[in-house]
Every structure is written in structure tokens, then in C-alpha cells.
Amino acid sequence: MFIYLYLHIILLIHLGRSRRKDASDEVRKQIYQTLLARSNNGRLGKNVTREVASQFSLHIRTVQKIWKRGKQSLAQAIVVDVTSRKKVRTGRKATPIDLEPLRNIPLNERMTLEAVSKHLNVSKTKLIRYMHQGHLRRHSNSIKSFLTEANKNTRLKWCLDMLEPDSFPTYPRFKDLFDYVFIDEKWFFLTQKSAKYYLLPDEDDPQRSCKSKNYIPRLIFLGVSARPRFQSGVCVFNGKIGCCPLVTYERAKRSSVAKRSSVNRQAGTLQHVQEICSYIESTYI
Image (tube, rainbow, N blue to C red; front, top):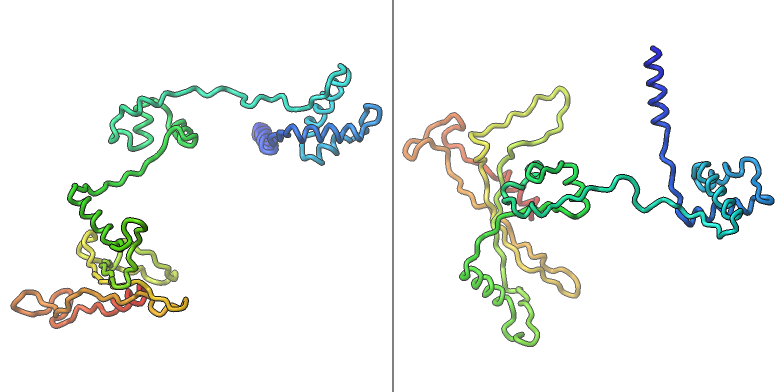
């Protein structure tokens, strides 16, 4: 019981102990001038240092040391200097680490901090510190399509075709594209691998299933748009032409000859996608 109380008291002392605040040189000068103004023939009244410490939100010992240094300077007939004597960097100096061997490590062997730490024989924490200091960087690399000379020439020709022919060579400008229509397709999955729902406590968990999670049925929509038109600052055409589904409606059949019922649906049942189509059209158009 005594050991428990002793440990509890030690813990409270450590939790209640706060780090003393370091005052800047300008604040230290203001503290000395305040003490000097409130002194009487070089003596301070009772609780003056405590009040000044509370005024500048510092520890009383800091204020007392500043006053003591000022009195010592006056006693030695030298200029009073109450600036901080603490060095810019104190404590143990960091051990430099040579990161140049990282260049000789293959890229596929330095894809994680654990692998780099193992090759350089450096802790993972120190590598993270070096990343924050800018000595090491993380790079996310995505594979790019390989372009042949013919591909590059084709892309360059397409970009040049987007310029007005009569604008060369003095002031090249792009076409207004008012006579262009842009068409692109968009794929939508009928469902997702994982979904989140908010249910009541007495509701049953929904059951969703498909033959393979890697081959979820999809719908393709064809979107058509053009450049918007404005007249006197008013939009007369927003550029949205339409979005239509590219699907085939067919009756359920088990083979190409005999049409019969299956475990999934009755014979003659249409594979309806009107609800999904209307929802996507209302959302993206």
C-alpha cells in the first residue's frame, strides 16, 4: 500500500511538472527594465519578482536570474547584458549518415522503409526524420504508356490541327470548337464489392451475391457534349446534349434454341435496366 501511494505521488509530480518557457532577448530586456523601474536604490520590494513573472508568464526563477545578472554587471561597472546565454543548439549532436549508398540499391529493393532500413543499417525512425528534413523523399511512380515516334508525331499533329490555320506564325490561337461534338463512354458497375448501410437494430443484414466478385456486370453509357453558348452573358446552351445507355434487351433463355425457365428468372423475363439508366441519367446529366 505504501509503495502504491509513493508511485502515485511521483506520477502526479511528473504530470504536474511543466517545461519552463524560454524568453526571447527582447522580452528579457523588457523584464529587466520593468524590475529596474520598480526598484528602490537597487532593491526590489516583496513579491515584485513574482508579480513580474506572472505579468510575462514566466517562471519566477527566470526573472530572479535576469535581475541578478543585471546587478552583477552594475557592480563590475560594465554594460548590462541580460540576453540569453543558451546556445542555438544544445544537447547531443546528430550522427551524420551517408545516404549515397542508396543510389546503388536496385529500385525494386527500396520500395518500403523497412527494406531501405535493412540495406543502410539505419533505423526506420531515423529515415522518417530524414524525410522530414528533406534528405530523403518518397516518390509514387505510375507506369506510363510507351510512345513510339509514330505515336508522338500523331499526337503532335492532332495538337496542331486544333490551331487556326490563319493564325500562323505571328499569333497562333486555338479553334473556338463551336462546330465540334465530344463523345465519350463511361462504365458503371451494377453494384460494388463492399457497401455500407445504416440500419435499425432490429433490421436484418442485406444479402448481396454474384457469381464472381471480379466480374461484376457493368453498363456502358455514351455521353455527348459540346461547347456551351453564351449571348450577352446569358447561357443559351449548356453544352449537354445527352447520355444514352448502350445495352441490349433480350428475353431470358437457357440456350439459343429452347427458351425455358432458369434458377435466376422465369422464361420470357426481360432484363430490365430502366431504373439504373434513369438514375444515372438524372445524376450525371
